Image (tube, rainbow, N blue to C red; front, side, top):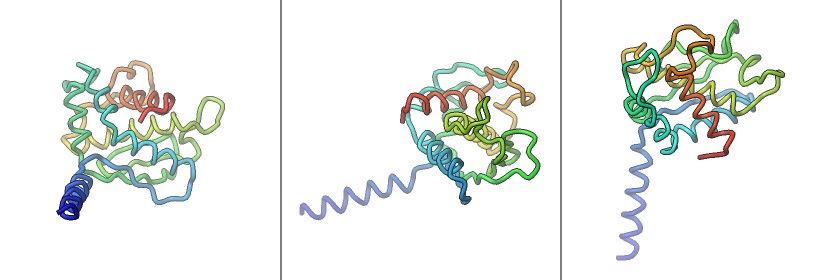
Length: 173
């Protein structure tokens, strides 16, 4: 009987792990900085704390959706998003579809001094993941206008990326 209960528990634990529907970033390259950033971003994307932090925002600029609605969409997004290389880097990263984020290896995750920063890299990946989730639905429901931080600080991609960056800096999981 004891064996049966253990097997049953294992089955339900495995089933819940398989049925998990969070968005997942996938990188098949060899760049150690990108590998580290993707790993950390995926930990954050599987964190209840992360979604609870997003839900605290009643409103974002340039969106009719609340933090709760955006967090729900992100949490339920059953999507693998591939991390790919941008050939002609103008910006750090870009997302134009629900299944691909393009990053510039030369600009990705760099701080003001040009050194790699895990927290900045994760911020970028999560920021772009917000765009990918937006594209999964109808697109442009919770994005921003332009790529300069000025007047974008309260849009969902910028705020949610900053939440992730703070989690990295505070080593919160």
